[in-house]
Length: 225
Ligand code: C5P
Image (cartoon, rainbow, N blue to C red; front, side, top):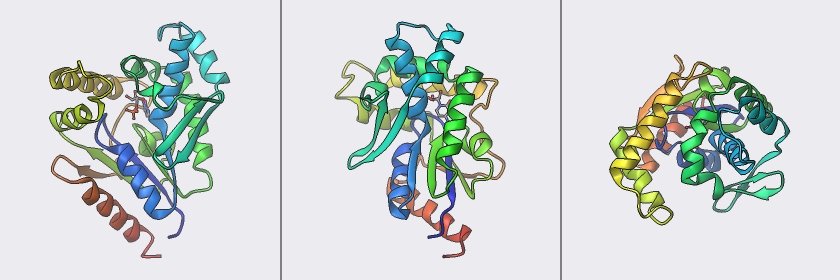
């Protein structure tokens, strides 16, 4: 298929990364998980014993970090300054702090510049919160993926039971709702559906159905080329 850019945005746990990766595989496009980039900065900030409110220091960390997203057999691997942090950036501590780090405008500017570069040659499926609205406003296809908070918490619950056996479904529901609130209410490029994005509510859709729907939309965009 002709190379286009596909932006997939939506709230936490809507299945963006799973879906984006599968769509990218089908089309032989590059998958870019921008949430992993905000998580990588957050991981580095915590490792340096800094707090999210130490903005100047946080920006310094974000400026000098070398973040690499490497496609692998079991999904994407994330490296920070050469160290593999794929699992570490999914910890409860990183998840609990990432929305505060991602509110800092200068951090967003630094990561947005990197993301634009990654998509410059097209053929990218990029997922996040502000891709269609701010990072790739010219993306040929924009999807806004959502699902009820309950179903998103249930999906997350199944995923993380091995890593956080003590967590309850109610706790996860609260964590997800609070992260959504922060992401939606921040001043710089908040989570929002771009006016030209296609809304897909996946509450009652299987992963395969969502992937097929997006592929159909792609084919319609490029006229079956
Ligand atoms: O996608 P994921 O849940 O891993 O993203 C983690 C956090 O990173 C989000 O809750 C949000 O605060 C931030 N993020 C963002 N903009 C993006 C992608 C992620 O602010 N494009």
